[in-house]
Image (cartoon, rainbow, N blue to C red; front, side):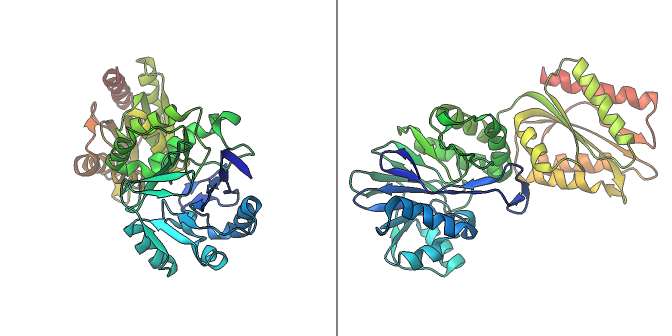
Length: 393
């Protein structure tokens, strides 16, 4: 096993089989379930892994400590991809004590029927392992109510649960200084925007708790161990949780026969000619929404359009707008367009989404097309693209 810093070992596993994380988010490059062992006068396991990987997990542990018992398991987050091995761990290590907060133990009992042998910690509490002492930080709603972090003050290693994690299996290397991190940056944004994105204020609260602490390593439960790029990672979470964006434009559309798609192309061309360099265009029926949500978090401008369908809004666009509203995204610009064959509804439905749920700043005049693109509608589309470009500056 890999020793990250003195006395701290990586004992996690890779999942290259699962197609969708939480049954929702594509995993083209897999995902890792990270767990760590601190071997001191007391042996402390930091989180576990999904139950399907327990055989490999227990082999990893025994490679480090042999037949030595584990004294503590710290649970930073109780989702089953990290807590799923608890019941089996109790069979192998019946005397192990579980370290968590009150809400952790409620979930532990609810998920696995486990109770007893509990060490409850509150914010600021410490746990001495010998040479190493863990200091705990309760970080509720990043992104479950029981989430917390711990800092090994001896090695200045911060264990963060899902915070600072990302999609993607680990391909041999573990610490960022030893691997090519390029594949992970956008996957961190996609992970944050889809999994944590709704909880910007709790993330900011967590960052404030950590502000006065010194740490040289971040060990999350998914993705690389961050060391060389630590400041970039913390800065990325800070910006995303404040909904800070960069100049750019996401255009996404639904289309049945290509007419609404032509509107999107005209809008994109006009925005580009008006000076917007970062433009991404998505067909909401083809591109998985997790990638669209990722880029909405990255870029300030958003223009959406779709046909009327069954006297309502085209289904995939309706779903996307619901997903965006659910994340409480702030400080964005929104333009919209729509089309219809015999009943006009799409444009009014998008306006309704913005007025009741999204609350983005409306830009330009909405464009509505009946049946097919005309020179007049073409110019209206171009005007919408230019208006967004002007707002983006």
